[in-house]
Structure formats: C-alpha cells, structure tokens
Length: 287
Image (tube, rainbow, N blue to C red):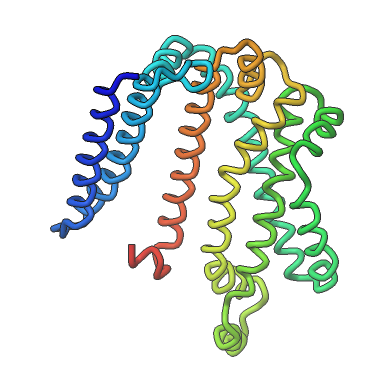
C-alpha cells in the first residue's frame, strides 16, 4: 500500500471540494460568467474523480485486470484510435443514429395517429407499456435472426427501444394544452391541423424532448448490447465481449469511455436543440 498516494487523494479531494463550494457561491456578473461557472463545476468534479480513482488503484495496488487506472485507459485509447474509430462508426454512426431517427420518427407519427383516433388510443397505448418492458436480451437475438449480423439488426433493436418512449410522451404532451386554450382556438375557427401546429405541438415540445433525451442514452445501450448476440468483427459491443474474454480489461474500459463520451455528447446535442426550440418555456427562460 502506498500511503503517500492515498494521502494525496484525500488532500486533492478536500481542495477540489473547497474550490467547487467557492464556485457555486459566486455571484456571476453576467451570463457568460454564469455559463463558465456551470461548466467549471462538473469539470472540477470529474477531474477529482479521475485523480482519486488513479490514486486508489495505485495506492492499494489493485490489479489492472480488476480495475485499470485512468492513465492506463488513456494510454490504451491513444494506442487504439483506429480500432476505436472503426467500432464507433459501426455502432454509433450506423446502428444508433439510424435506429434513433427511425424509432423516434415512427413513434411521433403514430402518436399523431393515436391522437386522431380514440380507438388506437385505447387499443395501442396499453400494448406500448407491454412492449416497452421487453428485455433487450430477448429482442436482440430475434432481430439478429431477422435482419442478419450487420448493423441493420442493431438498428432494429434501437427502433424497438426508442419507439414507445417517444410515443407515450408525445401523446401525453399533446394533451398538455389547457381546455381554455383549445376553446380559444375554436373561437378562431382553427382546424385540427392549425390547432396542432400552433398550440398543441408547442405545448408538447418539452415532453417530446424529454423522450428524445431519454432515447439518446437508450439507443446506445441497446446497440451495444445487441452486438453481444452476433455482429461482424467490429463494433463497441463486439469489442467489449471479445476483449473481456482475452482479459484485456484496459481495452474494455477504453470502449466504455468512448461510449460514455459519445452518449454524453449526443445527450448534450439534444439538450441544446431543446433550448433552441423551447426557448419560450419557463424551464428554459429561468435557466
């Protein structure tokens, strides 16, 4: 055991905690300074976690096969950029993005149809709860048998996972407009589609974007897990399952780091789109 490293970890944690406490108590002079503070706090927190992780692993001499230190993972990432890029392109740029677009688009269209048909609302929505509870490990092998080992089967899994969250949230959002607002549109002799585009869809936008943000992480998880059940010799899920068998745990963590970064960036892009579209909403104006 290296007591010096463990002591350094404690001191670094205390200093970072004090720095974050000071940052959150600052009174920003403007919007730019407020955004810089909002960015600095999670960065300091994340760096602190990495430093503590490094010190604990090396201080207690934990074998890298159990938990590699961040420095070892960073070295593996730097040495495996071509492999990681090929896996990222196969899993994220093909299966995730295509499945996400098709799943969310289909869920939105079906939600509009359900809104127009009380029969579909009573008959299809209960089935949505049933299908949304289906486990990935049960759906993925079926999709592989139907669509083959390449990325289309992974995209199909993503479609199944993202379809019902957007469906349920859109239907709920379309009902968010108050009766008084709908009556006002009727007094203006507005048609169904005018009411939909000018009142109900804007009111449903926060619900829809909540589903899109949830799906941004579900899509990546679904694609990676689906690759465990059959894939070409490329892909994040394939690499994780293969390298675990070879005991190359640093490569497994490198794939995990790339997946976490990709998922975070994807979520952030959707969140920025939400702020741009729903700038009028109190939750955005008050932020």
